[in-house]
Image (cartoon, rainbow, N blue to C red; front, side, top):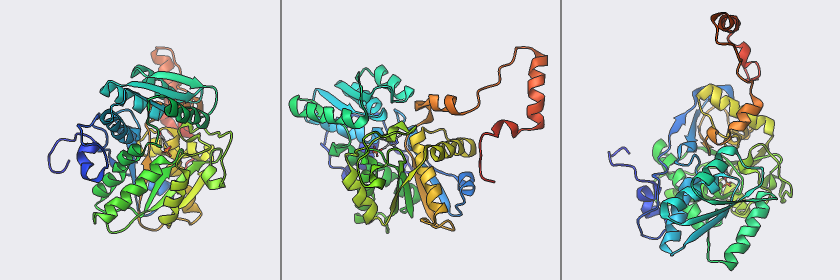
Length: 371
Ligand SMILES: *Cc1c(COP(=O)(O)O)cnc(C)c1O
């Protein structure tokens, strides 16, 4: 922090803005993530103002979910809970499991069987959660969890839990503190719609407190195969490679629609091909390896610029990169060219090396970047 004090997590940093029990936080010192300028990416997508990326993959369990989880688990401890439960496309599971471990609580997580990225499942298991794989999608898993908390004394830590949103607002606070103003646009992927709702709550709170003069427009981005808020109706069988936003009945849908409307923003849907291209651009142009859902914010921005929904000549835009690329290593292995295998001999190495040195671009031919 600028004043030289030690960072001790988002509750410690922003307590006066958060409605949460006044106990010592359960924290992994989450938050305080970088806001990185992205000039090469901006140029590639035709934006001539200032583009920044809020790199939430650098949170302790690799996604922004930790901001909400420190608040939800702290509150659960204050209320005397012994166990917590959530349905999850993966990152909520990993985060709940980690914070529950830190608090000494039991964690139960329900995931859609076969539809969660490898790094998320591995983490939830390692943190000691009980993982139940539901033969169904996220929405069905969440319906089971909602029923369970009516019957059993278990605390729900999905973003239906208001403390999750309390904690997640802190990303908006940090962006304003880092920029010393609000951005003109905030681009953010939308799944269960908790995060976009929390950001809007955060920006409004900062505005009311006189910390920022204006409010940003929100650009919420869904995947085409899982775009209930864009379509205006639930999607029974959501499909997208961006598993973190593979949700057909967003629990915070109405609040998200209201936030976008109030902000004078937009919601749009992008294809998996657009998500993958944005994902490769983030890595190859800016050195940022994110999970596919995170790249949806850039795919959406690119489309909004192309359609003239967002002015391309000026302004300050922040895109939220919600989760780390190491969460989903399989997507890289599935979509990129594999390494060239050579024998451990000088001649074989030379035969492989020389054409590469002569034509350094040959290996990136599968990256159809705009010129
Ligand atoms: C949870 C998540 C999202 C979607 O956030 P919602 O609050 O469900 O809209 C996007 N990206 C990643 C990496 C996530 O983990």
